[in-house]
Length: 266
Image (cartoon, rainbow, N blue to C red):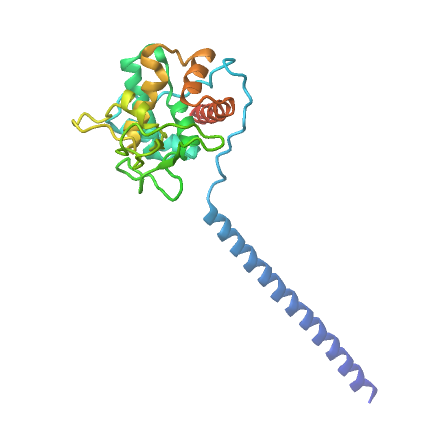
C-alpha cells in the first residue's frame, strides 16, 4: 500500500499545481482584458485638451507673440489647409479659424498699420463664446451657431453695466435692456457702428455670423486705423476698449499668445 499512497500524494500535488497555473492564466487574461478596455476608452477621449497658461502681463507691457500668418488667398485651398493644420494643434474649430484668418487678411489690405492678428481675434473668441460653442450652441459650417448666442441683460445687476435698449430688440430680442450678441459678444450699439458684412453679397451684417463678427471685431479693435496692435500699448488699448478689465485682457493675451505659438510649424 505504500507505493499507492505516494502515487496518490504526487497526483494531488500535480493537481494543485495545475489548478494554480489555471488561476494564473485566468487572472492574466482578465487583466489583459481590462487593460484593453482601458486603452480603448482612452482612445475615445482623443488628444489632451489645449492648455492656455494664464500670463499676468501688465497692461501695455507687451503684445502677444507673432502668429504664423494665413495664406493671402482666403478663397483657395491653402487657407483650408492652413486652418486644418492650426486647428489640429489648438482648440479652435476649422470654421472659426477661417473667419479669424479672413478678417486678418482683410485688415492687412484695408488697415495694414493696425497689425491685428487672427490670434488676437481667436483669443477674444475663446473668452466670449469658445469660438461659437457655448451654452449648447455649436458653430455650423455656414458660420452660424446652431442657436443664437445672446448674453445676459445689461441691467445694472451687481458686476453688470446698465445699458438701456438701443436696437428695439432687433439683435438681442430684448426691448428693455441691451444684451451682448453673437460669437464675439457685441453690444448692439457697438455693432451698429462698426458692423461690416464679410461676404460681398449685399446682405446686412449679422452678429451671429462668425465671419461678420470676426471682421467687425477686427475693425473695432483697430479703431478706424488709429491703433497699432503690434505694440504693447496699442494692443492693450484695443482689448481694454473691447472690455475694460485687466483680468479679461490677460485672459485674451494668454489665449492669443498660446495660439500664436501653436501655429509655428515644428
